Amino acid sequence: MNDSVKTYTVEEAKRRLERYCAYQERSHRQVRDKLREMRMIPLAIDEVIVHLIKHDFLNEERFARSYARGKFRLKKWGRDRITRSLYAMGLTDYLIEAGLEEIDEDEYQEVFDAVAEKKFASIKDTNPYKAKAKLANYLLYRGFEPDLVYSKIDELYEE
Image 1: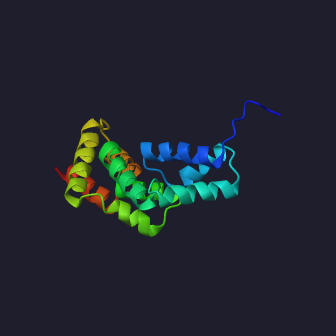
Image 2: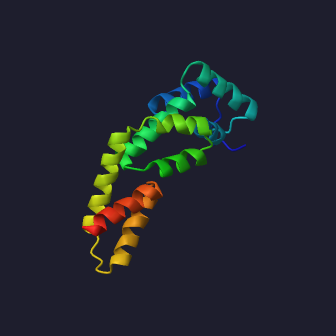
Image 3: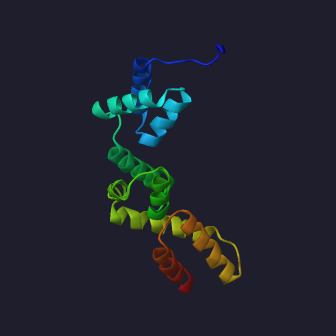
């Protein structure tokens, strides 16, 4: 038998995952993956997850809201990228919408303008088509909506 693999009782797993969830908001998938890493059986995984939900350590709506707020404010991601990321984590449309509600429209526009203008100022390409493409690709990669991106490019390059 391999002694290097730590095994956990259900109670030990509950305590460990309570700390894991208290440290930072987590999605159900992240918790399930963590429990699998701990080599817990499916029945025990379900028991721990139910315990965490019941004691409010795990709440996917709270996770979605926190995630959207954080990615927008800290990483300056746009709505599309946040949506794709939450969708990839297995969250429902309802939860994704709830997360996006955390983003203030005026603040979103300010951040978008600041990110676009900063990138615009840094592009040294003299070919206007290449410069526009660089700016568009950058802003789309950041997750800003195409209509917002292209109207901003028109505004910046008509000056």
